[in-house]
Length: 124
Image (tube, rainbow, N blue to C red):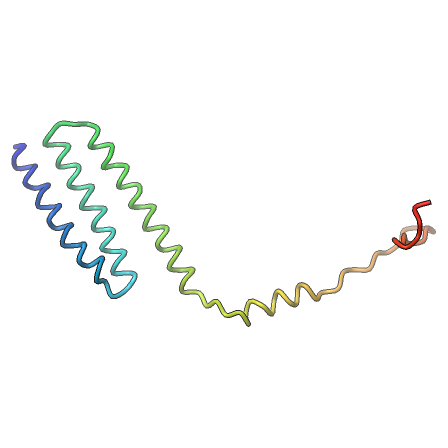
């Protein structure tokens, strides 16, 4: 049974190696990300088969860690892709900032009979 599991793991690794071609030649970001997900899933599958064949429990831990990292990588890719797809025109961003800077500050209303403090006057 161990020989079958090892040969299945080798087959999965071979298929993942073919997925590297798509990573290198992918026409778009989405194609490359899907190929990267294939690499992560294939590696997890190969590690699980290897762990079952050898009986090493540490291999299962590595496979689970790789699966978690693969999920975080896809989330990071989506956030990066969304940031890249947003228009970053300087004219659109500069107008709201300029309006905020040019907005007048509210006048300070003195309370009671005290005159408003003027920085030109002394503190006495």
